[in-house]
Length: 160
Image (cartoon, rainbow, N blue to C red; front, side, top):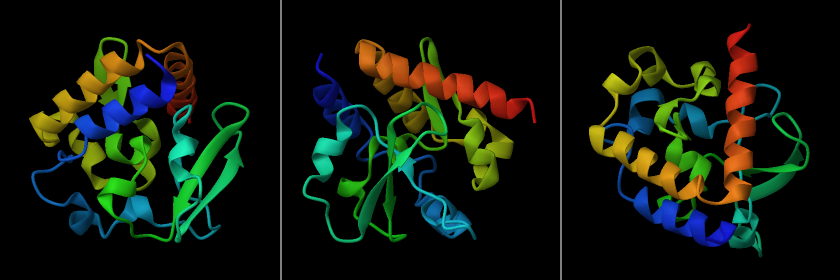
């Protein structure tokens, strides 16, 4: 499956499911949508996903991000956007697909109060949707490489 086709399919799987049965942004004040005091924030785009933001809609910006892997792109919004415009990373948050399922994304500890409860604190429909998305993403070499880099980065974060 082509990279963009996989992203579109996964975005559709995650279109109507969220970590909680209600809007989790109301629980934390949309913490994952806000930039920090250094104006850092945003979500990494999956390979090929940048095509969905060309032309760039109002309220969004894209910048290069080398924190996880060289040459990745970071999409930032102005703190509020339509669900249909949210990138795949946003739809997966605070989880990451793995080769055999899904786990919590260690990067979420800084902003997501759901982290302390782990997968058990999340909607089962959401967890299952992330697992299904992972099956599709890992069938595409570009996405498998991207996710493997995210998992390696997560392991580095755990050392701190």
